[in-house]
Length: 149
Image (cartoon, rainbow, N blue to C red; front, top):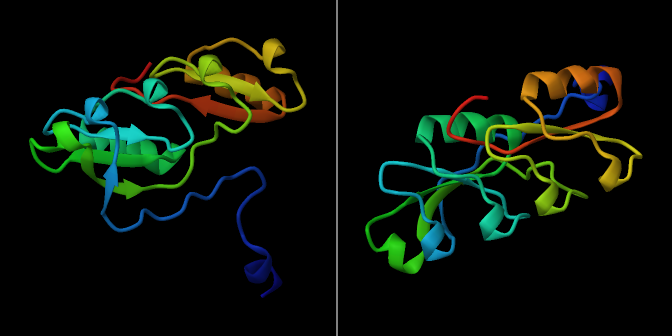
């Protein structure tokens, strides 16, 4: 009973909210993904630092793991007015990370606790970043991409 009240999540495990209902969401018209594709949109990042368009199944899978809002065009008018349909999977984990320090799409960056931004480890494959984080306290910064790297 106490465990149920205190929460059963293992230490360090991030529980992502269940995706919400599909809602309308506006993005800059030039950032709407092509018809038939989706894009993960992080409200905490400027438009020029958003991940690229990708297959919708991949976008939903990645947003489910890493947060973000999956957006897709409503119609051809979306490219003029920026109206999209979206499902919100919660925030990303970018707090304290300047956009220019983010990894490129499909890559990761280990972000270590109590280490100055200019002393953080470099961008690397996600496998290497996960290995490094097993040894040191920090979080995985991942920028979704259309391909696994």
